[in-house]
Picture 1 (cartoon, one colour):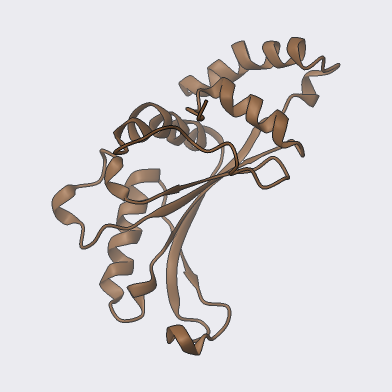
Picture 2: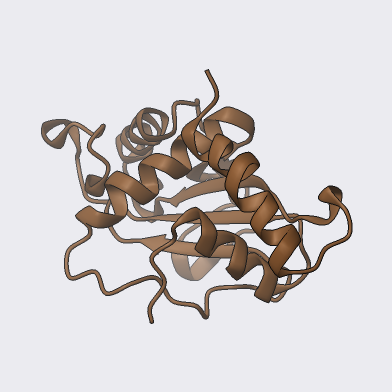
Length: 180
């Protein structure tokens, strides 16, 4: 069975973008290529269980096993040595990506406390959008009792367009709650 947002993209968003953006070909319509979810755990240097806990939470949230990221450089001020594990990340593509996006938009974002909308300034100039989340508890899949500490995460949505304007239009059509 095809994910709900993928179906919506094919049946509603593509025809609307072809008409409103005056695109000549269906291949010109921007698409979401991948979603990258990253958790940086600074305390992983002293306590490796923090990293294991974050990795487990990220696997539950995304449905995919995360890779452990290691420090590229040594930074004496932060007591980091090159090669130390400092975080974990997942890259989602295909049906898993659409299912994660659906859960993010319909379940997780409405659970954020004092939420006033996503910033329109978080585009990077190349059509990619990044969301910073302060706690992983907004996802209902995370077991509240099993977490050691509250951790944040960065979610980057990579689109096929080079224009922030077209990427904003695409994400708006998917139902992203941008600030008015």
